[in-house]
Length: 150
Image (tube, rainbow, N blue to C red; front, top):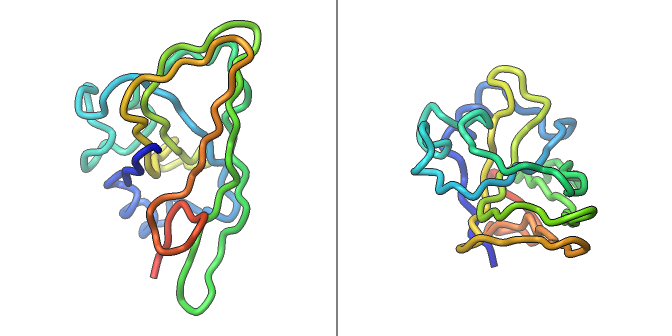
């Protein structure tokens, strides 16, 4: 099971209007570089953008765009629920990765703002024809939710 890690800047970006999560194009970025080893740690304050992530080559990999299942509030509680995403290697192997970032491809200020990442604990590889299903559920109070705001 992968560990969910919220990007610090996501809170500020959300409060200041960077994200409209009901319409945003959310996408995954894959990396095999420990966030704190990046030139600018994307999990640290002021660095929460995709440009600070060393991404793998996406050759031979299926789509990385995430489908939003539900985005809304009830009784003052907002939940963002994302469909599981299956990554499949086709035409060859996919480079090793350990970190799966979720970013807002629609964000313009800042560009490609990060929401969170999942740490798989060790590097994963996908050989030709292999798949990995990413479950975007965090440890929040609502089953299936990437996060909950109350």
